[in-house]
Image 1 (cartoon, rainbow, N blue to C red):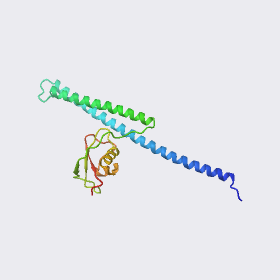
Image 2 (cartoon, one colour):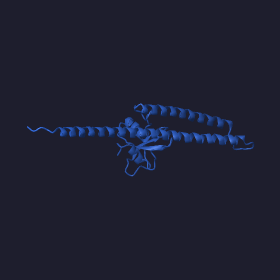
Image 3 (cartoon, rainbow, N blue to C red):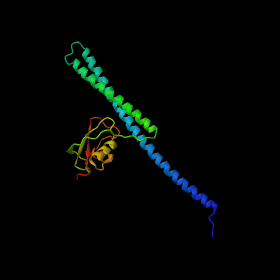
Image 4 (tube, rainbow, N blue to C red):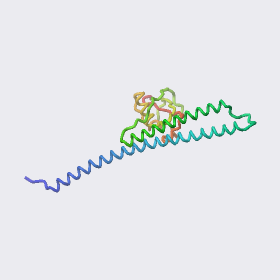
Length: 197
C-alpha cells in the first residue's frame, strides 16, 4: 500500500484554504462596492437638494431687492414673499429630514447593517409611451422622481407593486439621455411594462 507524501497533503490544504479566502474576498469586495454605490447616491441627492436650496435663496434675495425698489410696478407682493418663505421653510425641513436619513444610513452602513433604499410606493398610472426606446415595450407608466430616488429603488418598487421583473437597466433603456446618477426631482420618467408586448 502506497502512502501519500506529507508534503502533498500540506499542498492540498494550502490550495483549499487559498480558494475559500479568495471567495470571501470577492464577496467582501461586492459588499463594499454596493455600500459605495449607496453612499454615492446619498451624496448626489444631498448635493441636488443643496443646489435647489441655493436657487430658492437667490430667488428670495431677488424678490426682496425688487420689493425695496420704491417705484417698481412689477415687484412681488407681501403675499408672494410669504408663499415663497413657506416654500423655503418646507424645503429646509425636507433638507433636515434628508440629512438625518443620510446620517442614519451612514451609521447603519458603518455598523454593517443593510439599508432600504425606498420608503414609498410608486404611483401606478397606465399610459402609452409617446417616444419609447427602439427596442423597449410600448406600454408602461410615468413616475415623477422624488427626492432620494434611484433607478434601482424605482425598479424595485414597481417590481414589488406590479409583481413583474423590472430592472434599472430597462428603465434606463426606455429613457434615453437620462442620467441615473443625477435624477431630477419632479421630472417624469417612463417606466416600461415588460409584461406588455
